[in-house]
Image 1: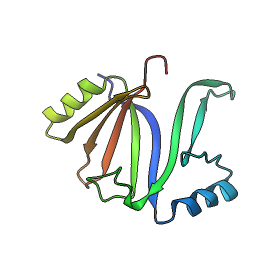
Image 2: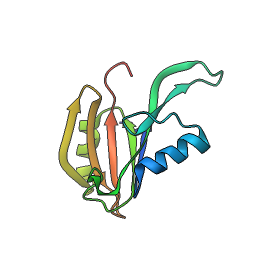
Image 3: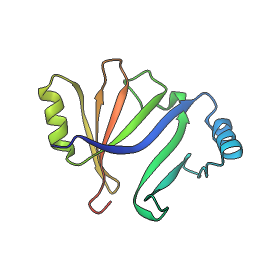
Length: 128
């Protein structure tokens, strides 16, 4: 079974997310949207768009999205079979969080790494 197949997103928290988003937009040219982040479309070696995006987002420190982690960041990894991977991680003794989410954006599950960082696993919807 394949495990991680790519990075779906990078999320981090800031004390002043509005100001930090503006800094990234002004100085690095990131097209920060109203929802607080940007989506980078994938391209092949020739620059032609291919299916897939990587999300980038800044949230508030007190937002709670990374709980129970106390880390200021979370990486979202793309996976092919979320259910099978979560079970394999449980069988290997990993700290898999019980909550999962299944929405129009795909299936999500979470595991805590040995340093206490919350890791998001994402199975994109079919066709992405």
